[in-house]
Amino acid sequence: MCRLLGFVSNAPITLCDLLGEQELAEFVALSQTHGDGWGVARATASGVEVIKAAEAAGESAPFAHVARSLPADLGIVHLRWATLGLGVTSENTHPFTDGQIAFAHNGSVKPPDVIDALMPATFASRRAGTTDSERYFLATLAAAQEVEIARALERTATAIAQRATFTSVNAMIATRDALHVINLFNPAAEAKEAAPHYYRMGYRITPNAVVVASSGWGDGWTFLENGDVLTVERATLAVHIHRCEGVPWVSRAGASTIFADTTSR
Image (cartoon, rainbow, N blue to C red):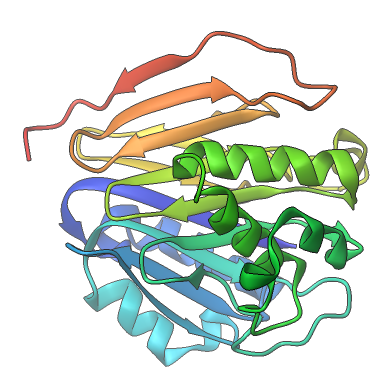
């Protein structure tokens, strides 16, 4: 399994300044278990850029440099714990990207090739690694040819949930305009985990930023419900939350919008 962190701020900021020394240390400490790779995606003026390595973040000089010296106003961070016997390689390290979208996943899908049926061969042929997560990314890209990216993420996640054995299809997407997060997991899988809220994503709104993350570190989180989809707009830091469709244990409810108390950008 893996850990996820996403953020949008009203000005470029390093991870260290965003989280503070103590919380950055708590997050990096998760790489003692989730140590099969790290990756960081940052929004740019024209798309996204990704830096990653198939090594533990806590033992990585490049990660320390990124965390302390590379500011961004929208980004995602992924700490990988390889599952399903999949290789610890750069090709299997998240986030995956096409230059416009960066994608990171927490969970496992069995068998991974179930996801291949959700995309045309032209997208399947772009796969460089062996993970279920990269397939999930490519299937989402394919869906985004027909609908906007947040809807494509929701459509793909629910299709996987309906077709495969899975623990979680929790995922984050960074684009140049927004951060998108889906919290969708198998309740039976979470019940087997020793850690509380293992597959529950939480968000935190401060005067200057919105942070969204997997559990296991930090405090002050408002946890998303299983089946929630969250979007944070880069231009305004507005937070939109709605329920996804098409999963038996997810009931429909109204959408909500929350604005962070930030100055204009």
